[in-house]
Length: 284
Image 1: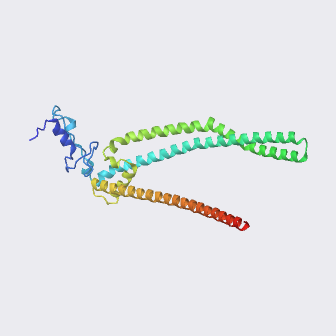
Image 2 (image 1 turned 60 degrees about the vertical axis):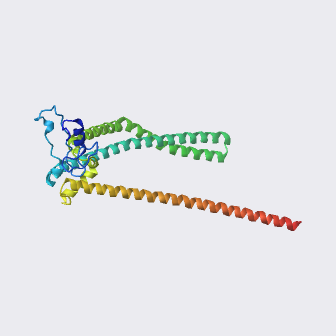
């Protein structure tokens, strides 16, 4: 009989769920089958009254109402994080838009300068001719039309840099700090879930199952979520396979068309050479 004080005994005890006996992954904190928190063996040097010896109630032993009470706040926090991330994305989009405005202003200004130089050259080379004068006038008008939006866009870009973008950057930093704070508040509850269920989508799916009565307990909700996630991955894999097959088909069609065109051209050249030889033979 194995000595319960031996280190190997603790390692063996940690490898299996103490409730249902399923083998646990090395980094798993909860059982993937029943959801019970992993029970780590205590060192014999710890006193019997040590807090580490108190077994924590696993999610697999909670009622649906208790699970809903845990998961609903998480769902709200996940939604809050999603909203903050959307705001951050919008703020980053403002920086991208302002960069585009600046680039367009530079393009307009450069084209305006080119038009002015061209108009000047037309005036000098034309030596006062009516056609050259008209051409120079047209080019000058085009340059002026390009100069106006260039100046407007540049002023708009400069105004954004001085007034708008600093506030946007501050708002983005504030949102990121808020996300970090929410994630820190969520961490104790999130760590109670298996690794495969620590996402907003998993939490929302299992919460919906519990609210609708389609899952009687935590293990049932986890099982249905993992089956759903597996189906989604399979569908995504099949979709990618179909898209890849379409790309390969398009490439094969393009290659076949190119080969057909090449064969047709070779046939035409061969026919022309044959007709030329026949013509030369008739002349002899």
